[in-house]
Length: 435
Length: 161
Picture 1 (cartoon, each protein chain N blue to C red):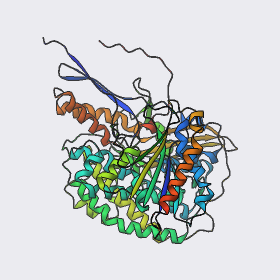
Picture 2 (cartoon, each protein chain N blue to C red):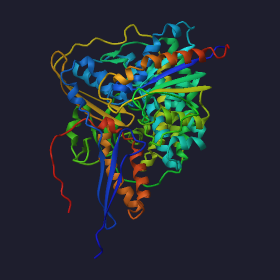
Picture 3 (cartoon, rainbow over the protein chains, first blue to last red):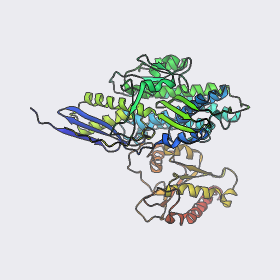
Picture 4 (cartoon, rainbow over the protein chains, first blue to last red):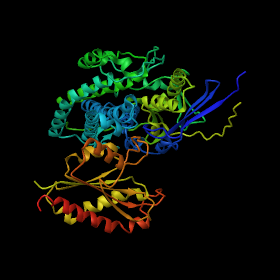
């Protein structure tokens, strides 16, 4: 019998992810014995902070959960509360919310592609190193990110923690001239975004395929952002209010983020899940672009996420152009609502995937209970599953440096927003004993 | 055409980390700077802009970035660096942790730095848990602001001299 050997490999700080976490890997006799993605950002307890707050405060409060995807938090919140109060704000608000979301997808996806993921696939430690050999591509990425921020500012007044959204609509409508100027910039950026798609598809991406469940929204006509039913490649088809019957969060002792499972199993949300499930909802020119690539969708290669992100940037630019072409300054930028007691649900597509909110309010519209399930909580079990498969495929007898590199690449590929996911703490003391 | 100066206060609401914001707010009230024609001096208050600093300084001839500094000096020590003075931090580049120095290095690699870039800071202590400045930092804010006001004015007028 061979001597048993345990190799703990710790990545003390994960570089190039949103927030902080570590990966702990224990190897015994050439097999992975234990693997844990540890998240050690302090729990943020946003749901508790929302209790006792007036419904009007919710959009600005939840925007503070994340500096990268505040629009997503605002959009899931306003839809949930409007669902609770039984109101629909009308076509102008609906269109502008979609434009608002386009801005966030463009900035968040550009940031992830260039600052976080692409250096992995090109063999650089950082965007700065990458810029020495790919200056034009880095400049293009920064321009696209800035353009996304500009869209968010148009409707939100500022790009980080925007303040323009409210229950019932927006506080302010941009002037036509502002909209026209931005639309011209979007038009000019479209060929750059299309070139970005071709660039990501030409990267030397790993070719591993895995079996996984994908979950996203699906809308009858549109590529999903703010509306739709939750569907999967395994036959799921539910509305936001049915989420809790099929998705259950639980606490893992090693993480301050909850793990969410779908029917007891890991699943994927995010750009690859959306694209796999909504290819037929792509605008025709984007579908043609996708079909022209060497990378084919639907895909079971997680590394094709970077191509999916780039395609979604093109979707978002085209959608923003389309909606802003028809822009007219409205007489009212929001509808009034009358609070009532009850429960409301909202689910939208954050850049990183499904973002589900539930609010219970009293008759005056004061929040009694809030529940927020961010995409990173939903992806966390899938990330750990992917890590087991990928590191096993790589071979755990590889040196620590190779395992570390591959582990980081796998995690970063999901664009985990760890700050968003750490908002709950179950204060139970557990003793874990290892044989 | 007169030169354009962009003054950027970087920080967060917490403790001494907010000094860039406090200084920027003070400069926004400066009668001297407000006396210049509109657009000559732009003042921004930002919370960790990361690589987007490059987009911000894109249209400026001169940029002054104000931020909290930790170098081991005594709290309250004023720092002033030019772009050439500083070397990039060796911290891993997360997009959260992609700080002013990392943005500066990226701008340098891309050749996208403004004509003149100054980093002005004040050394801060360890704790950033309150919502106000420490006495050591608050005490030097007036002179820090006054120095930047003079510097900005000189830069704004540099093309005319």
